[in-house]
Image (cartoon, rainbow, N blue to C red):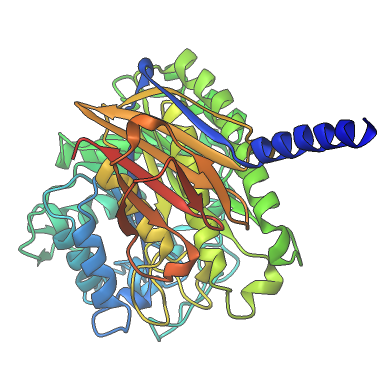
Length: 490
C-alpha cells in the first residue's frame, strides 16, 4: 500500500515537473490587442571603418543597402572631428576653412545605400570654436585618431545663435541645394541635390555641452526656423537624450515653451542595457534584461507626458543596444554575447511596439575596438553582419507597421524566461519568440501553426543567416538567447 502511494506521489511530481519544464505558447488569433505603428531600424555612426578602403566599408554598406530600412539615422560624431565637422576653424577676414573632402565619401555612400527610404540626418557636432573656452580645443591631424575632448564648452560665443544656424544652413545646402555661399561671399559648389526628409537637432545635449532643456529648446527653435527657410518640407526630431530625464520631456514637449509656429514632429531618446562593472558573462542575462525592463517602464511614463502635452508628436527611440562590462571590453568579446544582445533587441521591439513607439532603432551599424565594439552590428573581424544585424533584418522583413498584435501568453513560463508576441498581417499569422536565458528551453506551440515556416537565430550559427525549416512538431527548442520567427500563410 505504501509503495503504491509513493509511486502515485512520484508520478504526480514527475508530471508536474515535466509540465513546468515545457512552457506552452497560447495565441488567440481572434483577439486583437492593438495595431502596430512601429518601424524597426538602426543608426549609422560615422567613424573611420566606414571610410572608403577601410576594411569594414564594403560589407557594412552592402548590408545597409540590402536591409532596405526606413528612418535610418546617420550621425557623424565628435570623436573624429575631421569626419564630422565641415568648418573646423573659425572664419577670419580673409579665409574660411570649409572642407567636405573627408566627410563627403562616407555621407554620400550612406545616402546612396538608403536611397528611396526616409532617413534621419544628424550632423550633431557643433564646431568647437563656436563655444567659449579658456583656450582653443585642438583636433588631431589624423582623421582616424579618436579624441574624446572635442565636445567641450557649455556656452556659445554668439548668443544670438546666428553663427550656429548659419553653419547648419550652409551644411544642409551643400547636400540639398548644390552648394552655398560662405561668410566671405565665396560660393562653394557641391552639385548634390539629395532629399532630407528628417533632420535631428544635435545628439545627447544632456551630456554633450551639458545643456539645460531651456537652452536646448532655444537652439532647437532657432535651428528649425533657419533650416525651414532652406528646406520647407523637412521634419524635425528633437532632444535625442542620453537619459530619460522627466524635466526635459515636461519642458520640451510643452508648446508654450516654443516660439509660435514651431512644430514638434518627433522626439528621440536612447537606452543601452549595460552589464555591471566587472560582471562576468554568466550574469549578463539578468542584468541587461532587468535594465531593459526598467527602461520599458520608464517609456510608459514618458509616453504619458507626451500624450498629455503634445499628442501628435511621434517618438523615435533611436539608440538601443547593450554594453559589456568594462572588464570584458578590454578583451575579445565572447560569441554568445552577440546573441544575447540580439535577443535584447527582439525584447525591446516587442515591448516598445506594445507601448506605441513609432521608430525602434538599433545601435549601431559599425563599432570596433576603441569605438564601442559591443554595439557593432557588423563583425569587425570578418566584416559580416552579426547576430545583432540578423535579428533586425528578421524582424524588419516580417513585421510591418499596421500589423495587428493579438493576445499572446505562455503558460508555465517560469521566471519569464521566454517572451513571445503574435501578429496578424492580412491572412498571415506570425509569432516572434525570444529566449532570455543562457540555456536551451523547449516550448510547445499552438497546433494551428504546424506546417509554418520557422526562422531561427541562435548562437550555433555565428554570423550566418537564420536557419529556415518547416514546423512539423508541436514544440520548438530555443537554444541559448535564440530568437525565432514563425510565419504561416506564405
